[in-house]
Image (tube, rainbow, N blue to C red; front, side, top):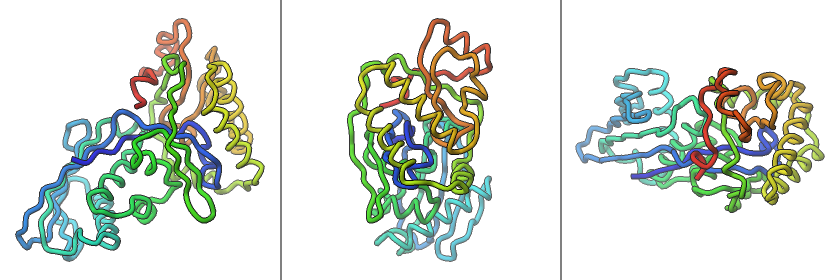
Length: 299
């Protein structure tokens, strides 16, 4: 079995694409990958993708002619075909014979959580194929690659894109106040690629990148929850100003007595907040039923 953890990006969403230092953490749950091979000369892939133990995608793909032979989800099967074609181009040994592959994946967290259903798959497949997960992801999906780094390292990381290379540094991020932190689901998934397209329309500056990099360093180093919350409030305000849109607290959490920080693409998935007296009732009454303890989610 191959296993890759999911991820959460705590700082430098969007600006990580332009070289800002980012802090990302792995989730306890992720995606598992299983494969059996049969030397039968058929050149076929039997692909079954499970979501939390329930069959989601069932596809048969012929890799001699690269065609979906049958499936219950044509769009998803076509995406898997594309990924496997890319594997053939960069792997030294997968899809260069006529074997049959029986592949099964299991995504442990709900697909609408935004924890990395795609990045965990990219890393699992790359490990299986003995190829570069960053290259496979770039060919298949794009993005900054921080999510691939988390899946590959299985650790909290500092991540930065530099002109000549990517910097991935494993770090220990276990703040003493982590039992006070919460993750709140916004009841829908945000399209991160659409968020990136909108971000690209804005003119960036080196100063902006430096500001978010410095905030990332301070967030990593602080051991005071009040300082931590204040830094993330500054982060949220700076990002809102740059994007020209209201911060999530102003839009959805106006009466919330504590901080709230967007995670990943703005407008969907999860936000980070902290506990306060009556927090469970507050979130429930405001329509947010999925409220998770940070320490239960993050590895």
